[in-house]
Image (cartoon, rainbow, N blue to C red; front, side):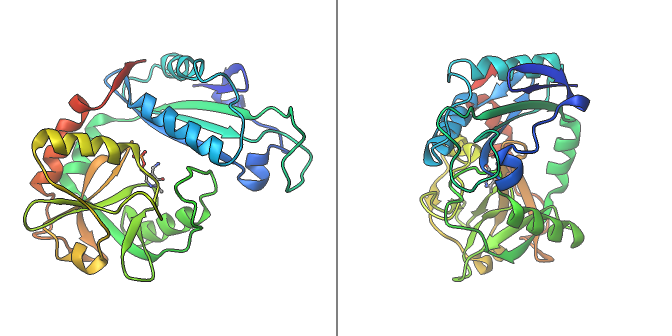
Length: 285
Ligand code: PMP
């Protein structure tokens, strides 16, 4: 495997960053994950647009010109022979002697790009089975709209899910409303067949898959209600699912051990999943 690290393509096994990288010391960095499917990078412009927003919210400089990054993504995908899988981009505020305040102007931000293969057959199987989620109290800061590498609450929540035999954890705010998953957005389907997902202004990451699923829903003639929903409503819903670049729309069959509907993946979720690739923007790798 090959990784891109600050201007060089290096063997993945030897790829490393300096101990004074601010990503390592303070999680002072941001990232993106794009799906690679059938030789295309999925929704790359939207992902790079969100990267630009994350960087600007944190006043981190672009490590390379915005025009060059797509070329680096393609090159890393190509060099790793990834046809189906993902490409990961991380930008940190760079390397500087440890100090909380921003480093001196002129300190170069740091860029790492990696790519990894995934088995599309395994994803199909997962979607046929569905996943289980647990709920955990929301304990993150109020800027989760920034895709920061500071993911400790997400790590702990997803580990707790794993130990409970589940695949995702849903954060729940003090009003009992679901915010989002540890690494995904949260959705339900009402008895009327409408899609419900939390507004992206506050308390969640504006998922790229979430945005593209709005387009998919429009194409399929499905209604979207962008509003908060409670754990109670989710448990009584017709369907529930998560969305992310690597899972697309993934059916949930149980919440906190209780089955959702009949405990099988829902047809609306599966139709969204089916239509997704056609609707998404595809950049040849
Ligand atoms: N919320 C969180 C906390 C995430 O980590 C992710 C995955 N990056 C998402 C939502 C889904 O975002 P996307 O569809 O852009 O992958």
